[in-house]
Image (cartoon, rainbow, N blue to C red):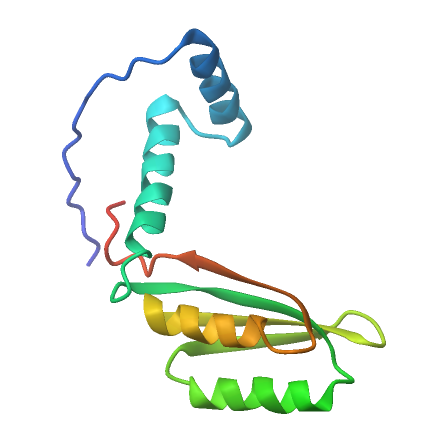
Length: 145
């Protein structure tokens, strides 16, 4: 059965300089939001996700993206060992060959912020990784619709 509960809405006013309001309206249109309220709610959610991920014990989800030269055999062993050692945080992986030498690896991750960040730092900082990035989001449980 579908949850038909609709949360009540709280209204509040915001004062902005006219130029900032115009930029907000432009962004609202470009992103396809129905109105300013939807755009602002989206920005508040994004900031809540970012704020909460600062807490080491917060549960987060996200991705670790790596670009590396696959010829570095010690690197491949290290990345594989890290993945096996942190299998409780890794949900899935995607490996793609970008060209003859370079690979793209994307790991979907989930867990305590401190654990996910530690794993990402170890992988991104591994000798031979050309570029890496941790992107964090929410598991969704702590965010209202």
